[in-house]
Length: 106
Image (cartoon, rainbow, N blue to C red):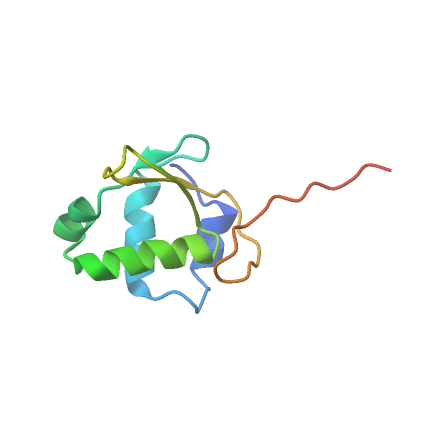
């Protein structure tokens, strides 16, 4: 990913997320894109970022809950969960999936 997206700019001032979320998001920004869901292995993030595995899982969930990542399906029954980046973030209720709203033309 290149350049600052609206989501990345918002993350810099989002007080709901801590430094761990910023580290994970910055790492994933180079791995994921905005269209295709790609697998994210918790063990890989745990090892490369030296973050506790349980904390990686909680942080990924928080990034989804706050609209920075879109969660996808698992690869197989026991495979890694897939994610994709969101270009822009709007306020969402925790636990609800963010939706895209289109402006109606007059």
